[in-house]
Length: 243
Image 1 (tube, one colour):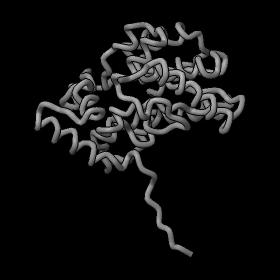
Image 2 (cartoon, rainbow, N blue to C red):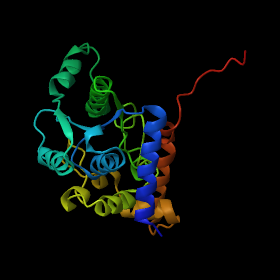
Image 3 (cartoon, rainbow, N blue to C red):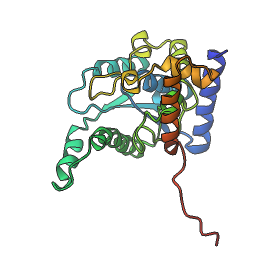
C-alpha cells in the first residue's frame, strides 16, 4: 500500500515548505554516516533544495571502518562536505570527568552521538544552516536513538516512515544499492541494530503498520521498549504555575 513516488514527492514538498517558513535561503546540514537514513535524508534535501544548499558532515570517532560509504554518498550526490573527527572531543570529556565518578557504559555509548549533534550545530550556525534529524519511525518506536544526540535536529523528514519505507525511497531516488541495504551497526560492538534489538526491522515494521506479529514474546519486547522510550519523543516536562 506504500506509494513511494507519492510519499517521496510529498516529503520533498514538505522540506521546501519548511525552509520557506523557517530559513528561506538556508542550507540543510546533514550528518553523513554512510547508512540508509542519512543517505536518504541528504538525497531528499538535494531534490528539495538543490545540491548547492546541502552540506554533509562526516564525523568519525578515530578510525571508522565504513567511512568509504559516507564518501560514496557525498560523491554520488555531489554535495559539499566537511570531515570532523570527534575522537579528541570525546576523549577530552572522558578525561575531564572526575575520577571519583566512573562513567557508566551507557554514558560512554551516548557520548559520541551527543558530540556529533553539537558538531552539526556548530557547522550549521557557521554556514547559515538548519540541522536535519535522520531518525526513522522504526528506530524511534523502540527508542533506538540518543536523546539530544541523533534524536535532535531542526526538521525530520523520516520521523513517520518505517525502515522498509525509507529503503523504498532510497531505491526510488536511485541511491547506491550498497548504501540503502547496508545493515546498520552500532559502531561500538560491531553488532547490527537488529542483533542489539532482538528482532528484525521487517518484523517491527509489520507490527507498526499492520498490528500483526507472529511471536508473542517479540511482541512483548517491542511493546516494552516502546513504552519505556516514549519520553524521548515528547517535549521536556515543564512546570506551569498557571499565573
